[in-house]
Length: 626
Image (tube, rainbow, N blue to C red; front, side, top):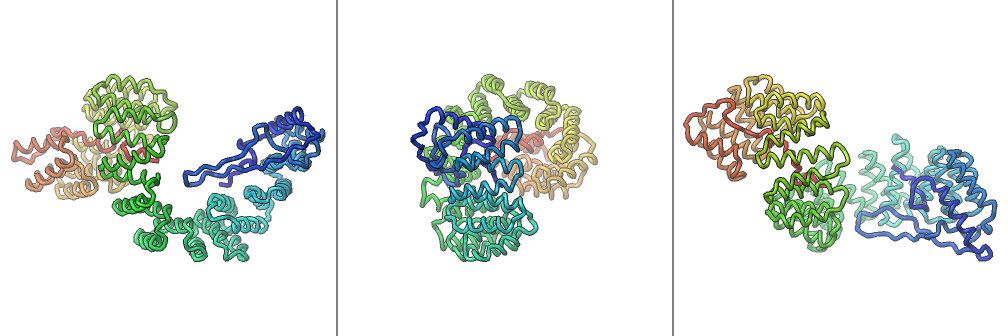
């Protein structure tokens, strides 16, 4: 969306009163016989994708009036004062008339810009156009003035004139000023989407050899998802400027949504010609991550770091890849390097704390967590501190820490309650966990997370009526919640003889969330309870292919054993033990069958808590990413 920010004021919104106050101060303090020298204004520019910072020159005493101001005349001050009073009284017509007169008298850039803002706000586009032309004559190099002028002309129906302005603006921009191209494309994308591209490229003919003008067309086509115009314009842009990284990244992004093999071919060919293009390589790595080609993505990130060891993006992305691969030493090395370069990144603090917690380095984890400043990641840091206290053996301190956390809304409060629930369960204090969730649901009776977790806890505590009540209510609140259907269906299959009802619930879960390993596991389990062992084995193998999980292995081994395939069952259990040697469900299953040759299954005999595992209430290290 085109951002109608004030051209010469840092604050947005009405600044008329500020102009008047600054003018009165100047009257009281300035010597009118000595005209003030105009100071060049540098308009703040949007932050770029790099870590560089722009500097804006300002004058602390207020707006600087231009040399041709007629001695701060009474007429000028009168118009400013009337504009301010009218604005406060919401008389926008009078405010605009007075401010416009002040703009023409003073020729002060900031007063003119404020008048343009007010004209646009009141939909007086003709006045906005005239004022914008005045400002353009004074400040011809400010691209935002052209954007305002073009927007006003679009509103007046003068689309051809507006397009001419924008195309000429684009064609004379430096290629590194990507934010300008994006703002032009944003303004164009707001126009009539059915013919704006036709109009743009028809109007662009005099500048058809300008890669910058073609780049704007490429951006608009990308935003409007017009593949024909996009392919044609991006290819033209790259033909005119083969090494330009920005259109190459756009093409890479477009291809990644179509064909990963074609994406690889294009990216590798481009990087052979332009191996130094770091941003393109980084985007390629992200594309490979999305396609789960983690080794290839890591190779691209390592290539970046071999040339630029201080690339924050490459350090961050590769650090997360190593976390996903459970290579915590490599992850720690990358993220500590990042942290040495940018110690203000609280998200990196959280990841480093997670790594230290995984290695039982609790004091080091606490050091990172205590450094997280109030803001986006503060709540997560406080919750992790409570986990650290509990893991060090002081559960009471962890619970106290959670209770003193100030929360802003229901979502944050429920997050804290769920963590208390987790800690109580972690130390097998199920009654305390239930008290916590009961109290939370008294305050927030329809909170989906609290309902889901109490439902799971109720199943674990064999409170089947409460489990069903909570899951039914959750399904009523969120009829598309696949996990609620799955949890209730699994419980009915595992603990009752209501097998047809269980099959209906799990089938619905599978329709809502196809190929989910835990739902496939439930499907296999209900087939087993119904005596359909062949179907049960098929679904359980699909589940295990989707996720190497010890509890799924326990179920598959159970069915294989009952089907006379004891050796295969033992092999599956052995694999599960390698994945999670301390998993209680798997250990109980193996112990039970090591003492009997029977494959007979008694409902309720296997005390499985798999439904709790199927949607962890604690957010994993991957779930706190930007």
